[in-house]
Image (cartoon, rainbow over all chains, first blue to last red):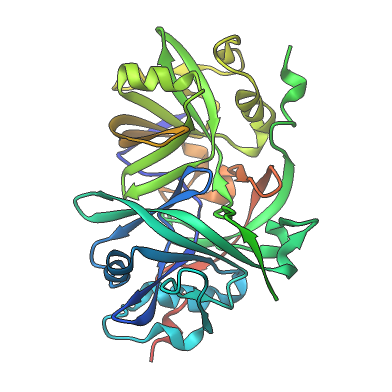
Length: 184
Length: 184
């Protein structure tokens, strides 16, 4: 039986990311799972206006999106618990920079997307930053035949429902393929 | 070692959804995983302009976002393989309507979000529809203590990397909690 939950967002799980920006010339990181895909290489971040990281994105028009694995779940959660206003969150990570120079990235995350801000959509409580991916850096260890393998990546999946992180399960099937048998 | 993948979107997995709209007064469904969260109850759909479903969203300013489970992976994939232009995709599902009257929802999906279109962001190849969730319908069987339980929901997670669907794994820890021990 269906029950009504009210205006409840149930679009979970979402991939947990650590967003990097340079605030006052210092790298800062924030844990963000309210992300999205607009076009194929254009992604969005729904970031509460209180985040310190937002200042750096506005200032430099660049940011990074880093994908943490299960192994660094504590460090990832930590970056969502404390603010760069009063804590230096770079201590847990080795920071590197790419082509854009102002988008700090995390060596310990197997995937890093370096982004150029292309648009900001203003919401009452959130800045929605839309970025074009300029370059993606990847640990070779998470690739299978040249493609990112979620089974090796072991991303952290976030659910607001019960405020929890989940792991990835098993591959179920191929997209644009497994449903072919239903075509009449 | 890090390798460069170019402008590669690696923001996966994303939740696979089936988006519903009423096109020429008939329900239509499209499989969409390029979704996002803007504010807490505002979500986005990055939909290629070729999709038939887009017409209905533009016409009625409403849509639904339905969350399919592993059990209906074939039907879900089917809705991404064929177009409503020449196939009636409602045959596999029981359709129901809610408060908005023009956002068809799928009974067989455990979660259904009924949305009001609030903004469209235009991209070269995609309409990005931003919707406010008006009401959420949920099968009681996927709830644990009133919250949606991903272990019961068994959502389909999509990865463009190797064009595949994945299942959800195990709960790893609580957000805004598991990292507390690192706070000094």
